[in-house]
Each structure stands twice: as structure tokens, then as C-alpha cells.
Length: 149
Image: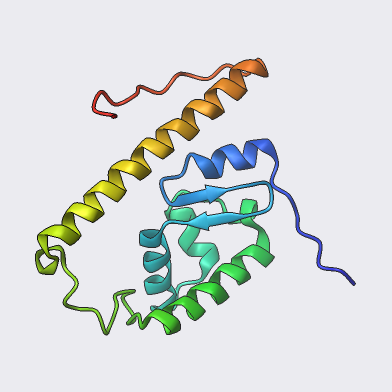
């Protein structure tokens, strides 16, 4: 029997998109932020179940469904093993990578990338608002930051 993915409804996608813990959502896929992944992994290591963890992060586990929850748990364990996370979701092998240990050039690169990503997110939000407006869906416009390039 083929593995059929359950698609998110528009409302479920909006609910996931609005979460600060979700980096990306499509009709079939949801990606968590790195910080959320590490938090979830840490709590899994302490014995909590995913169905208990996600509601405390403002994400309805019923929206994700049991298959996605299992997939998230499996993916987090694989990522933790691959990247050497300890039980708190921190890198065991990379304890020296605090911002104070970055060179000035590395820090500038990170800051530049962050500015680029923030501008990209704002652009995507404007596209979504334009699409919603074209479809006749009324939403409150989000205030744009004044410091965008």
C-alpha cells in the first residue's frame, strides 16, 4: 500500500505558519526552527512524549498527526546523532562555537546572512498578504520594519 501524505488545510497551514517555532510549511511539509528542534529533542531525552511537547510550544499535535510526529521524532534522533548533540540539544563537539569565539569576519558574515534572511521573510510575508488580498481574504497588515535595505 502506498504511503499517502495527508495534506494540511489552508487553516492548518496558517496556524503552523504563525508559530515562531515553524521555519517552513507547505501543504505536505512542516519544518521546525533549529532552536525548536533542539528544545524538542532535549525534552524527548527527558522522557516527554511529542504529543505533550508540541502543545506547550503552541503547536497542535493533531494538526501534525501521528505519522508526522513519529517522523519528527525519528528525524531529530538522526540529526542529533549526526551533529553530536548531547541530551540538552547542544553540540558535544562544538562547545567553543559561542559568538565570542567567532572571528570578526565570521560574525560579519553571520550578521549579513541574518539581514538577508529577515528581508526574505518580510518579502514572503508581503507575497502572502498580496495573495490573500487578491483572494479576498482580509488580514491585518503586518508592520514592516523601517530598517530594511
